Structure formats: structure tokens, C-alpha cells
Length: 265
Image 1: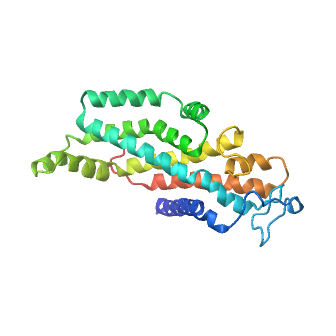
Image 2: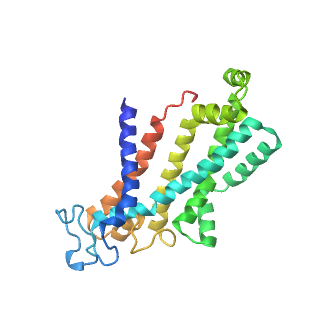
Image 3: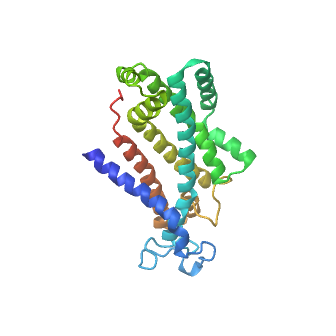
């Protein structure tokens, strides 16, 4: 019951973040012109529920708009990892043979490169657009999902229920994608996709914090909001993005932990 409650809270948080990213432009808030040093470091108020930063900008709206830096790209990264990892892992685990061995070798090569290093290398060459970074993160995470799914499918392809399905005339495609991937492995896949999304959130915030990559001022990111206010005396403008970052990353973990996988050992 405890995990179900945490999963529900995690799902609400993630849904709220995605909706905030989609609907933020409809608010009419202007990120560029909302600068007024005369209202710098205001505290809580009805007009500014989370106060203002040292340039007098509304922390609440910048926090909302900052979700656009990772929500869409994070979903893209999860989709890329899910597509490549699921196709390669499922087909390789079910069919076996030289093609599967080649796919696993490719996974091993990509997986041997630290993800953060791979992102920096590709970003240096092709630019640090959030969408480019998302593609690289998805590609770098596909081997982990592919290898896990390969092992799961390979261990089940000779199970009794698979033999029974063939005896009843089920096609290999139905056995693989419906029974082995959807019914037997969806929790496994879901956990990996949530991990990809959470990783992208942390990655984007880290890159924006250290500068040189990721979202740059005046566009907000939770990472550059943190570094922008560090040491300037406004605790609320610093605490808000830190708390938001912790909540979103924790939400992915709560939801992943609640996915029940009866085949886990």
C-alpha cells in the first residue's frame, strides 16, 4: 500500500511537470522582459508566491518555464532508448544467432563509454541543443535496456507457456511481442524508461549548472536557476529549483519501485 501511494504521488508529479511544460507558453509570461531590480529578492506574496530572484524576476514562473528544458527532451530520450533497446533486446533474445551476437557486441561497445562523456563529446561536435542531447542519452541508455530484455526473453523462449502457445498455433510475433515483451517484461521496460527520464533531468540540470552546455540565460533551467542565485542571499529562489529537482527525480524512482515484476529475483 505504501508503494502504491508513493507511485500515485510520483505519477501526479510527473504528469504535472509535463503539463506545465506544454501549457507554460499560454500563460503570457515574458521571460526576457520580466526584469525589475526594484523588486529584487522579494519574499512570499500573492503576486509572487515563490518570491523573486536578484533581478526581480518571478521565481514561480521561471520554475514552470524551466520544466520545458527537460520534459520534452526527457520523453524523447526515453522513447529512443525504449525503441532501440526493446527491438534489439527482444529480437536478439528470441531469435539468437549471429545477428543477436552482433547486436550485443554493439551494445557492449556503446555501453562501455560513460554516458556523461558521450553526451559531452557529441554536444561538442553537433551542438548542445536539448534535442541532440536527448538523442544521445537515449542511444547511450539503449544497451542497458537491450541487454536486460535480451536476458529476460532468452530465458523465457523455451518456457512451457511459449511451447503451449506454439502448439495452439500462435505466431512467433504474437508470442514475442504480446506474451514475452508486454506481459512478461513491461515492468522491466517501464523501470528502464523512468530511469532514462530521471537521468536526463539530472543531466540537463548539471550541464546548465556548470555552464557551456544546456539551457542558457535568460531561458530558465533548474540548473542555471541554482547557480544564478548561489551566494546572493535569497534562500527561496535557491530552494525552489532544488526542491523541484529532488521531487521530479524522486517521482521517477517512486513510480519505478512500484512497478510489480513477478519475474524479478
